[in-house]
Length: 162
Ligand SMILES: [Zn+2]
Image 1 (cartoon, rainbow, N blue to C red):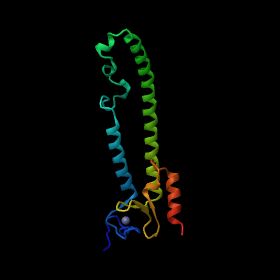
Image 2 (cartoon, protein in one colour):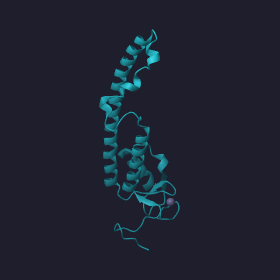
Image 3 (spheres, rainbow, N blue to C red):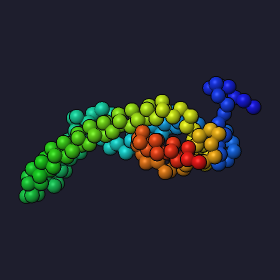
Image 4 (tube, rainbow, N blue to C red):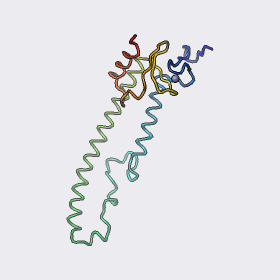
């Protein structure tokens, strides 16, 4: 009955009374990170190669086609297009930078949460978080992504409340 694989008995989910779908907080973060990486890959534009953000969007893609270039407004449109492309590149760059900072911060928070609350468990059957031996459970959907240390503190206060 006692599973000693992590030197601790398996945590029983207070919601379903089962330990089969219970994961540690670091396992939950691993899953979350994998899902997010997956979503980011799917959201990335097809024309942007991995790590190729600095070179900007494929210029061929933004070239007006020949028919359009023959129009009188073609020149003006190209000039506007280039200006738009330049400012758009800057926007993309700062967005990527902000995203990288956010991702780094989220990772630091995850490590801090795992270190501070190694007992925290989640049940994938009910999508709740709980403490082993406790009676209360908090829905995972109550958390906002990315999960911050402050959020984890508030969550633990809810779980520890009598
Ligand atoms: Zn459960």
